[in-house]
Each structure stands twice: as structure tokens, then as C-alpha cells.
Length: 501
Image 1 (cartoon, rainbow, N blue to C red):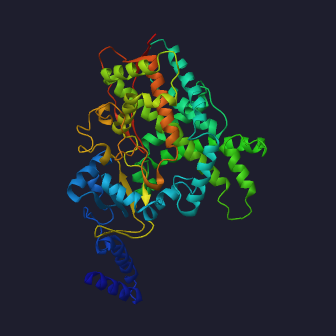
Image 2: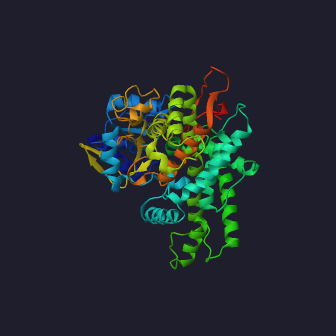
């Protein structure tokens, strides 16, 4: 602290001097104070010391950040501080620390960091904070429920898409194929029906292009990198993919703006068809010029729904299919349970769920090992938080390392193995573990959790009921590369779906 005061005093002397060289020295002193300021903050959680300007970027040695964080956790503990560039991050690992901080300190740790708000234009639900976020989340929950989300009445709509998907697979007559496009459109059509009031055909080339952009946005965008290295977008080329990500986002937004324009042209307040109509009706009822129901907010919200609702569940199902191909004995047990409880001619329904504990366990294990959002979405710190003798500083970014839970050998012995039995009791009942957070946790838990669970159950059970899923080549199991972006997804793989009848 003494050295800091001396540097400040010298800086002030330079600033008041007449020497033309002194303004430059003043700027240098200011820069040093900014760079070194973190060192004088007291009681920060432990972490690597880092270097001026770049912080501890050299600690990020792996393509998969969770591997870097696992290594640092061993050295510094469950909660550690790391500076990347000029940005401050607090990484939280393990069930206990996540629950104590993200759940019990939710008031302070449920905002979004400034870089996310800036990137999203401070609109939508996923990237906003404060009163705007609370108002829009409340409106979204109420409106989505009015269109069936969280209710059994939505099941018919989901099963319509399941039936179309199964029929499309049937047409292939056992030929090897990649399910990515078929699955993405089927899953996306459910959220499209709720938000846009319509669905898209599987041969709609324009919509397929949009689906490809959405998947690329999730599987390639480095959200953490944009938090500490956004300045790299000004360099020649595109070293972090920020420019490419922005181009994808803009193309998706043009599609969404087209949907909003069509709704404005056909809007009838006596016939509210979908989420966009409900928002437009609420927008008309607002009298304040400071309303939270702006055109930009509508665009931001439906962008959140469309992107997340189109990709995450589809990715989870692809992981599940991959694991079932590689574990034929597990697939056989899953089918046997379906055959015994439902039969081969009756369509699965949510009423069957309690009678299919092994199927439930397969889905939970697919979520755990697939681990599709390994670092959740970053949180922001509203004010300084004192925890276990340390200070989590205001303005820092919180990283929720959910991988530290999914791959915890204490909770899940032999965590790299696909073992649905870990979610079953000794008498065969399904037991969802309270330490398991596939939809994140705290106030920012996934808004579409109930819909995603319904989709995952109905799609996967229907596929296994109808088809024997086999590798493309007999006896040769598929290998995939893991694509790390906002989500963790498998690269493309092909398989055969043989009708069981």
C-alpha cells in the first residue's frame, strides 16, 4: 500500500509540472495503477498472479477451459480469482460453493456482466439485469404458460413434431444418416409454434440455413473470450471468431425481424396467436416512455427463445444417441423397459414417465456426460460479497464451472463412463441427484427447463421405441470431436436407424 501511495503522489507531481514529457509519464503512471490495482485489493480469493496487461491468459493452455479450471482448482481451491486481460473473473467449482454463492447470495450474484449486456444491446432476458430482467422474465413466464409451457396441453404439439421426425427417419429405410438437421428443425418447430405461431417444413432451405447458423453460434462462439479479449475484433483477420459470430447473429436477427414485421401487419388484439402477439399487445398498453416493452426488447427476447430453444435440447439428444450406439446393452435395456411398459404400438406420453425409470436414468446420464453448457452462462457481481474471509469484488465476472459437478468422482464414481445406473436406487427407482445442475441453478436457472425435459423424454423414448440404433458400419462405433463454444456438442456422426418391426 505504501508503494501505491508513492506512485499516486509522483503521478500528481508529474500532472502539475510544466515539462512536456511529464504528461506521457502521467499516462504511464495511470496505466501502471490500473494494471496493478488488483494487487492492492485485499482479501481476494486465491489465484494465479498474472502479468500486466495480459493477466493470467498464459494459464489458459487447453482448448477446453474446464480442463484449465480443474487444474487451477487443485492449486487454489473451489473458489479462485483469475485475471484475463484486464477483466476479473471468479471461478466457482463444486456443489457446495455453487449452492452457497449462486443460490444463497443470489441478490448479489445474479446479474449479467457488462460485456454480455453490451454484446446483446442490453435487450432480451439472457443478457440483462435488474428491473428490466425481472419484468421481462415475469412477463415471459406468464406468457409462455398461457401458451402451454409447463403444462400437459403442450404434449400434443411436441408429439406432432416427434411423429414427423420418426416418419422422416422411416423414409431412409435404414440408410446411414446424420440426424442433426432433422432433429434441429423438429425441436425448433416447437419453440417456433409458441413464439411465431407457425412451424417450418424439413425441406425449407432458408430455415435450414438459419438452423445451421444457430448451431454454429452455440458450438463456435467463445463467450468467455469475448469477455476479456473483445478488443481483438479490431485486429486484422478474426483471431477469436468474434467477427464471424457477429455476422451469424446479424443473419439470425434479420430472420427474426421478418417474423416481427409479418406479425405487425396481421396483428389483431382480439386474436393473440403467439408470444410476439402477446408482446405487441402489452406494448400497446404501455403509457410510459420508459417502458420495458420496446421493439428492441421484443427482438432480444425472441432471439433468446429461438436460439436456446432450437439448439440445446437437440444437442442433448444427439449426445444420447451417440452414447446408446456405443453402449448397445444399455440401448437394449432401455428398449425392453419401453416395450414392457408402453408396447410398440402406443405413442409415449408424459404419463408413462414414472413407469420408465431406466429411460429417465439414461436421459439424466446423457445430460451429465454430454454436459452441454459446461460453464453455464457468466454472472455479474452487483456489489462486493464477503465469503469465507475473501471478497468477491463488484464488477467481476462469475464463472459457474458446472463440469466440476458433472465430473466429480465423489458424486459420480468413474465419471467418464456412461452408467445410467448411477441415477437409480437399489430397488430400481429413478433418483435425480440434487447436486446435479443440467439447467444451471439459482435465479438464472433455464427458463425453458420444463419444455426441454418434455422434449427430451418424448423424442428419445419415441426414437428408441421405433428404431434399433446402429453404427454406420457394423461393429465400428462412431468417434466424435467435441466442439466447445457456448455449448459442448459432438461433431457430426452418421448411424443407421432400423425399424424394430
